[in-house]
Amino acid sequence: MRSSKVVSLAHAASLIDDDDTVTVSSSSGLGCPDAMLAAIGARFEAQGHPRNLTMLHPIAAGDMYGIKGIDHIAKKGLLQTVIAGSFPSGPSSLPMPDIWHLITDNDVRAYNLPSGVLFDMHREVAAKRPGVLTKVGLDTYVDPDRQGGAMNAQAAEHPIVEKVTFAGDEWLHYKNFVPRVAIVRATTADERGNLSFEHEGALLGGRDQALAVRNNGGIVIAQVKRVVKAGSLHTQRVHIPCNLVDYVVVAPEQKQTTQIEYDPEISGEVKLPDSAFAFAEWHADKVIARRAAMELAQNDAVNLGFGISANVPRVLLEEGYRDDVTWVIEQGAVGGVPLLGFAFGCSGNADAIMPSPSQFVYFQGGGFDVSLLSFLQVDRFGNVNVSKLPSKPYLTAGCGGFIDITTHAKRIVFCGYFTAGAKIEVGDGRLKIVKEGKKKFIADVDHVTFSGRMGQQRDQEALYVTERCVIQLRDKGLEVIEIAPGIDLQKDVLDQCDIELAVSPALKTMDASIFTDSPFGLKLKEARHG
Image (tube, rainbow, N blue to C red; front, side, top):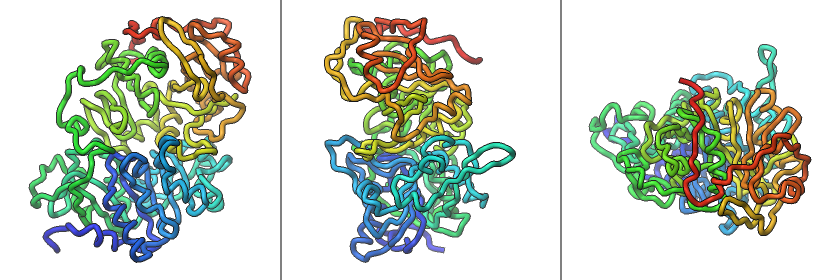
C-alpha cells in the first residue's frame, strides 16, 4: 500500500474512462472542485478523452462569476448526459455559460431534478436499493405528466422519471444512476486520505457520493487545499474517512467560495458581533422582505431561499430579533445569519453545519415551520415558476432544492415583484408605480416548480408577497388580501395581470410603517410550538 494517495491533477483526470458516470460535490462557487474539473477539460482538449460522460451534480458546480465548474467540461463529445439540481446562472449582461449552449443546442441530454432527490439517489445506489420512491415533484415539471425533468428534446427522448402506484397511492420513481467516479472537495487530507472540512462553508453531500461510488467498485478523487501527515487530523474533524478515498489532488489556490479566498466567518471558525452584519438597503426589496418577516413567529425554524427573501434575516436583525428564529438553508447551515452575494449558501455565526443530504431529509419531511422563497411567474392555479424562462434559460439556475422544500412545507411565503422591471418609488409610508413592468401573474407558467393544486390537496398555506399587494392561495384560486398604501387596486393590481384575481371582502391596507426608511416595530407572532 502506498504511503500517500496524493497524485497530480493530470493523473487523476486520466483515471476517468469513456462512458463513465461521474458525481461531483459542489454548490455553485461553494465547495467546487474547480481545479479537478479543469483538468478533465484540459485532458479532453489534448487527447479527445474522456468521452460521453454522464455527470451528476446534486447542486450546481460553478457559476458565472469566477468559478467555471461544469463549464470546464461543457464540451461537445465529452458530455453525453448531465443530471443536475441546478446550473450556472446569472444576469443577461454576462455571456451565456457553455453548458447552456450545449443544452439549448440539444448537444447533451440535460435533466434538472430536485437537489434532495439527487442526494437520495446516491443513498439508494450505495445501499443497492431500486431507486427513489417519493412524492417530491408530483405535478411539477419533473412529473412525467409534464416534462419529466427534461431540459431539452434529447433528454425528453430518454425519460428517467416514472409515475407509479404503490400501496394504493401515487408516487414518482427516479431511476438509479450508478456513478463510477466521485469528485469531492475538502480543506485538508492526510496522507492516508482522511478528509477534514475546517475552511469550508458547507459539508454538502460528498460523503454520500463517496459511499455510492465505493459500494459499487468505483474510485473517489478528493481535491484539497493541503496535505498533512497521516494520523495528524483529529478524529472528530474527519468528515470523509480514508477508506472512502482513493486519490487526493492538491489545489492550494482553491477559493472558499466565489471571489472569496478565505473568511473564517464562513467556516464558523470565528463568531462576529451583530454590528458586522449590514442591514438590508432601502428599496422595494426591503419592503417585500419586511412584509414576509411579519409572517414569522417566535422560535420558528425558517427555510430561506435565494433572492429577495434572503434579506429577511437582516430585517430581523434591524428590528432586534437576533436569535428569535432559526434559519435553515439547503447547503446545510443551521442558525446564525445567512450571508448574501457570493457567500450565499453560508451563514455567519451558524449553530451547526449539517450535511446537505440530512438537511434535505428534514426539508422533504416538512420538519421546519415556514419557507421563504422567490417566484418568477405565478398562474391562475397558484403554480409558481422559478426554474426556467424559455427565452433566456440561463438567467435561472433550475429548481435546486425548491421542489424538495415546498413538497411538505406547512407554510410558504413566495416573495417577488408583482411585475418584472417596473420602476417604483417607495418612502414616507407609500408606494408609487412610476413605470409599469412586464406581467408575472399569467394564465399558465412556463415551468411548474410549485404546484398550487398539490398545495391545496396538502392544506399548505401559501402567500405571494409583492411590493404592492399580498395574495393568498385559496380553494378557488388566488385572492388579494392586502394592498399597499398609495396603490390603486384596479389600475396597479387587477389590470396588471393576465388572470382574474379575487379580492377579499376584508381587504386590508398593508402596514404603512414598512414603507418608511426606519425600523418599523416588527412584532413576531406567538410561538407555534414549545
